[in-house]
Length: 390
Image 1 (cartoon, rainbow, N blue to C red):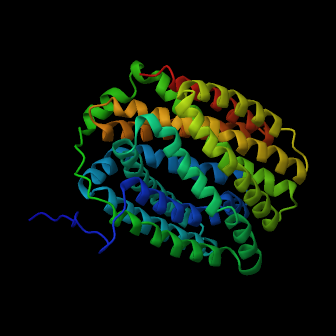
Image 2: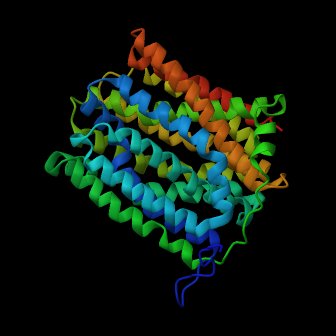
Image 3: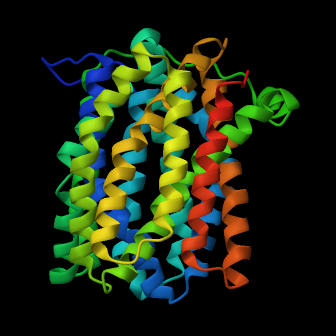
């Protein structure tokens, strides 16, 4: 006997276009995750007392994503987009709950890493496939930028709000608020038309080509993009926490203000990618962002952090948006988009794992935290190799 979930389930008397449903779902998701994301590395650091454990957590998580990519890619092909995202929402809600009780049992951090890896794949694989199948190659830049604009505008106050919640009620309360929001985020996708099941090409076919020389440039491009992201979400918050006197409110205030500033240029980067060209904008944006991260190494005061990070976020879209749009453009050329997206996750997080192991070695040798910013700079430059990838 076989079991299948009802793929035709939808919200009664209400329907949305696929991208519209995705935008609404992502908005709630971003609202939830932005409440806590900037504080998670700080939380782990405060519980463990050592930055090495923060890096080990993300390294273990990256390993699990690589390990789970093919099996969960198969699961997505069977569950369908909506049920996959629904499952991802419950995993993230469970993850937030585990974070809320982590101080009682730090060993739960390993379980959280498992949930985080599974959640990431169950959400992002359908997310990318909806964009690839329902987006427009000529307008990928603008369509990608809409997600950034909506997310940043809606969540501009959430890190500040999150900082005050932590200061007033502690981390558990913050995680409970985020838990409710993430459960709501999956429902808009049930208002979009049903997508037929994706054909899964098989794990041997995916593994057989992923690490061949033909994907060398694509691997280094994804390695670069992931490395820059890791420094931004792990190293920068902890550095910021230190220079503001370990104040959660100040970390939230600076993060919220920067998010609001960054919304200004995200839309412009999308239009530029479509009109000027994804490749040209990616080159320019990558070089500018690489230079900004070198400047960040000299930040010493909260005001400097706000100014430099604001400029960083102003220009980050000119790398992130064309990079994503160009990725979707290349996916359209493939016979099996699901295969491309699964391979993307493998390359992206395998590259991230290498970077995290490298950072672990540097930190063990006593390398200053700011020296790790150079990795982000190099990563941005490497991301331009997507242009010449197959």
